[in-house]
Length: 306
Image (tube, rainbow, N blue to C red; front, top):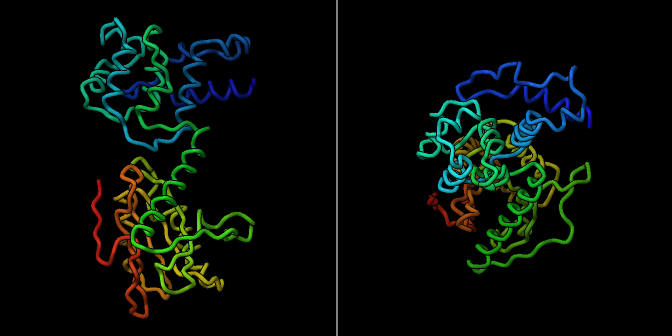
């Protein structure tokens, strides 16, 4: 517990800044050498630091509900003037005015923590409510979010195939990597693709518009390498696909893949879990000149995005 508190306060010192990038004064921060651990744990600074750390470990994985955000900030202000509320938080009044006037949608972790911490107790405004309005998912809920996204993707793909008159079955045993874990999120067998035994391996990536990672790097690049290696390991597969939910990233990846020409079927699929439908699918050009089957969208479909 001691190390956790100390780490939290150290991180708070390093990250706590006003919206205009002015550092908090050192005399506002607790001195670990002069306070007992029990005092530090119960100090206001520690609670605010916990909020900041919690937000930094969370993920922006949803849409901002601006109306709800404005309502919560006004409620948190309570009977105080806008300037008094800002002074209590140590930020410029313009930082709060821009939020309540709808000119700012995404709030920094530090400012959001301060709003929650300095909220009028009578308002009932909590950090959890502010996080929900900002589309922020707590660290402890991220696995559940990813699981729900995977289940939504599985359902949407199956529904689309069944609607088009194709069969869909799920194998009892999933594909495994050498490490013993699932190589892909799910596998289906369908007569929509008339070769490779109809075996379709699908990986899901929830990127959303808040993702800070470029498409061509990291895990997406590793997925492409893994997909290609799957064929060359002798796996009997009809198609390997990556489902993503971010239009810009989809178009970037599509542009990258359009420059390739390969012997086996690899595709990317753009999905909207909010609309509950497939928006587009793109199959990497085939080196033998075959025209791939577009089982989910139809050849040449351009998809309509939000």
